[in-house]
Image 1 (cartoon, rainbow, N blue to C red):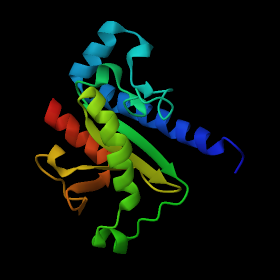
Image 2 (tube, rainbow, N blue to C red; image 1 turned 90 degrees about the vertical axis):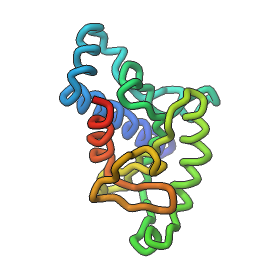
Image 3 (tube, rainbow, N blue to C red; image 1 turned 30 degrees about the horizontal axis):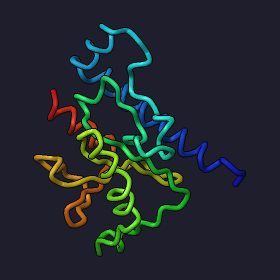
Image 4 (spheres, rainbow, N blue to C red; image 1 turned 60 degrees about the horizontal axis):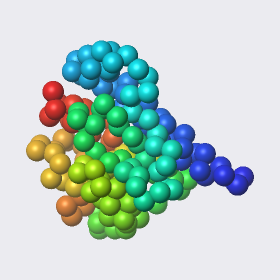
Length: 167
């Protein structure tokens, strides 16, 4: 891999997550759509935080802007080349890499802005998942994996649940 390729890959993933969040809420939340259209400025939609990982003041990889009241999370994004989370590991609760990112990055960043920590991740040729504290959802969906007090589920499903709880 060329020097800087990992960083570029991570940046691209962060941009995709920001774009997907904006698109989903624009299409599915009347409140968000009305607010966004009333301001009419592209700079207020969610976007990759260019300072993420560089400065201690950063509050995650995605700067949510006007989406924050509807999606109150500090998002830490990870796009791994090889994510080694086998079913056996999940059933044993061995998710050390995710928990380390959750506690050392997402949680620390979330506390700065009084948000909830959320790790959004994928590996090559996989869907996008998220990892969070189970207290965030009143009702857990059918498809999820619980590891102690944390939950792993598809990010798309998580967004839909959050939209339902905040509309």
